[in-house]
Length: 494
Image (cartoon, rainbow, N blue to C red; front, side, top):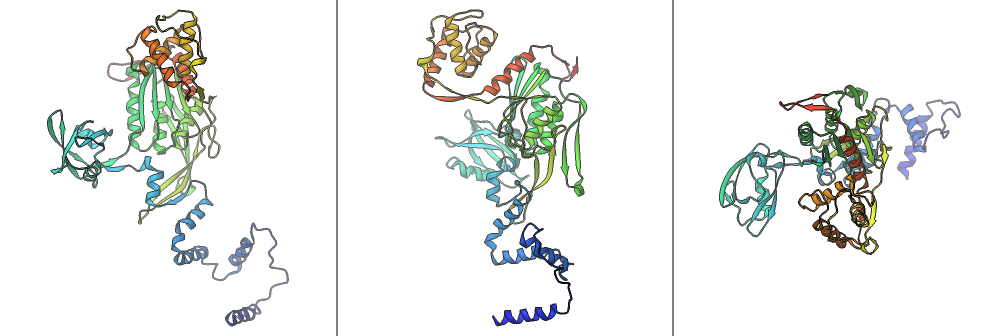
């Protein structure tokens, strides 16, 4: 108490040397908090504060020296005042939250433990293992000359991983033949892009994430091969895609846009980092009859940028549900101690909708998926002994289409065996790996009835969004093709 009293006396004596008119300095409540008002006075009048703008930073440093365990909490509390996406993470937290971006260094195989030993269960695309010719099913005998026949898959994985650009030899047994190959370890990123033909002239492309340039490579390979297939319509599935690398999204948008000089999207940095950077199309897109993009509440960030760009430019029709609404991008900064600083550095902007942060994209066709409860007792009895052919009109056709609709292969039952029913029958054959037929044979009807028996009493989701997209794309694919594929692998617009 004596020390405090002496300090107050000293302050009183010092203050006596400055004459301030009564009421000239007051806390009038104009500031947001009392602290704001006090700090404003310190900042305005304090001699040391004039040339030391880091008073608060120094205070926080002093506090963290006394309470080091509070580092993560304090930094994340400060970052939360900036935006909802910036964060400070340990390396373990980052690996869990951003696994699609991180990847690893190795040869690029997935391993499985079997009774014979460790076998290759997956060969990742664009990996050293793929380049070296390793195949699924290969039994690993040795790694760098070390006997691996009695090792676990974890022990083999540790030997295969190592520093980037180093070599490792792998000996495998394939069909009673032993082979030794050399792989150069490199950065491996999972590829999140795949495609398949859904119907005549209709291609389906699924992008689960945009984790690296590998996804752009996989996408461009699929896209560049569409003309050879005579593709006229595409379903691009971005549902559940949380985003990833912005440049990958912009490259995909450009590849899909047929017209040159179209404003695709903008990336708005701080003014001292370049301000607004716009991406303009180069006109390399294949002129398709239709592009449909599927989106949902988990479509976010760079995936929204791609979907929104195609929507705003009129290149595609969006089907599904309102998207997440993450229209800001972050730098992911490696720190010396292994921690990660994820900090918002840019804002994403669409040609018409602007920034979609906190808003998301509204599909052109809002289509929720529906849940179906299967009760075989409520279905029309199906006679499986008689084949049904195109053009047939009967109660048995209705019974068949009831089951096809319940499986999500048809939108609604009908008594007429028309083209839509034929497509549904063929989809059922493909899904159940049955030989393709141009009618509903007794064998198909029996398999269909058995499928419903297996689902009796269960509730499952029908992908109404996919059904809607497929129907629109089939209609578009029936229209004349807008390009001609050339023998040299290129194409020309009709």
